[in-house]
Amino acid sequence: MLSIKIGDTLIGPNSPIFIVGEIGINHNGEISLAKQLIDVAVASGCNAVKFQKRSPDVCVPQKQKFLRRETPWGSMAYIDYRHRIEFGEAEYREIDQYCVKKKIPWFASCWDVESVDFMDAFDLPCYKVASACLTDNTILRCMILKNKPVLLSTGMSSMKQVHGAVSQLDSDNLLILHTTSSYFFNPDEINLQVINTLRHEFDCPIGYSGHENGYAATLAAAALGAVLIERHITLDRRMWGSDHAISLDPQQLKQMVRDIRIIERAMGNGIKTIYESEQLASEKLRNCKAM
Image (cartoon, rainbow, N blue to C red; front, side, top):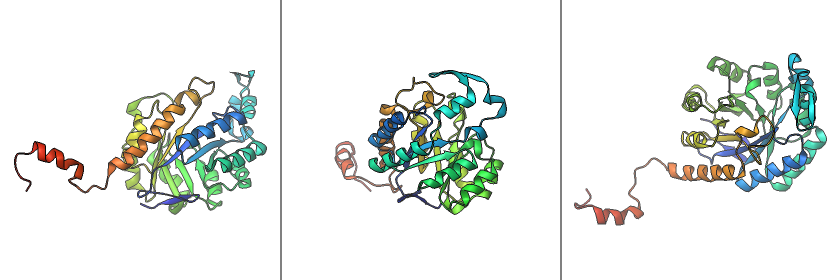
C-alpha cells in the first residue's frame, strides 16, 4: 500500500495516524468561532483542520432554495441561510493566517468546481471530495488538474461508484476514506470491515471519516489500520447547526486523540516477545523452567 504526503507529513501504513479535526460548517458563519475550533484542534493534538466550501447558488437544489428555515438569525429562505454561513475570500484569508500562526495545516471539502478553483488562492496541501460529490466527474477532473493529493470520502456510495471515482483520479496521490453518511447513530451501519475491503480493492492508503456518536468505532478503525482519521468537532454538541450533534466536543476530541496514540503503541510489531516486565511474573507464577 502506497503512502501520500499532506504538506510535509507522510501518511501511510508505517506512519503515525493523521488526525483531522473537521470544522466543516460548525463555525456557523462566525470567524471567531472558527478560530476557537482551530484552537481546540491544536490543543487536542490534531494534525490538520478541515472546512467545507460551497457556492450556494450552484450547490443548493432549486426545490430547496426558497424553503423557509428557522435560524438563530430569524426565519429565512434556505438559500439565504447557506449564503449567511458561507465564508468568502476575506474569511479564508484570515483562517489561513491563523492556521499559519497556530502551526496547523488546513484544507477543505469543495462541493463544486467554482469552490475548487476558489481554493487556488491558498496553498492548500490537498483537496477533499465530499461523499455527496463522489459521482461528480467534473469536480474530480478539476481536482486532478491541481496536482495535489486528493482525499475521497465514500459515504452513500456503492463499490462500483467508488471504482468509478477512483478511475477519474490519480491513484498514486489518493487516499480513500471509509464513510457512512448517516447522522443517526446505528452501530450496525458503520461497517468497519469495509476498511479491509477497500485496502484489498485499491492500492492506496485507506482512512476513516466517522459521523457516529462518541468515538468507540473510531478507535476500532484505528486498530484496523486506518491511516487517517477525520471527525467533526464542536465547542458544544448542543449548539445550533446540522453537524454539531454528531461532532466531538473538546474533551471528547482530546481523549480520542490520546487513545489513538495509545492504540498505535499497543499494536506493536507482531513479533511474539517475552518482555522484561514479564520476567517477575514468570518467576513468581511458573513452576517449571522455560523451554
